[in-house]
Image (cartoon, rainbow, N blue to C red; front, top):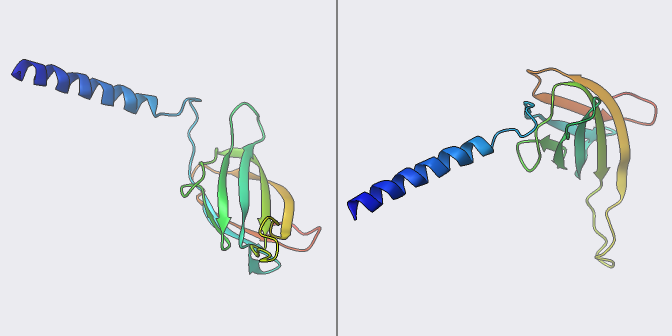
Length: 137
């Protein structure tokens, strides 16, 4: 019985090591988490999504949900890659029509797009989505 316990423990440890190795980045790229704020005409965007797509294709991008004007890729999203990045933001007012529960909230920002050059050490971004034609800060 003691020999079985020892072999079982070794097998379990080997599986844990292999599982940990398998959890690494499959694409060989290093992602980093980004967080920040998204406002529309000075007010926090209630709900939406921000995505970070590398301009040089071949690797999937990062994303994060927007909740009450805040986003964090570490909270329900996926980290972004450094370098030239296409950013896409969608935002909604978050108000549901009680008379029509299937209706979607009103779009504040349907597809705001910009580009950024994300630095390796960059971890916070503020997006102030203004009236049409203005640029984010």
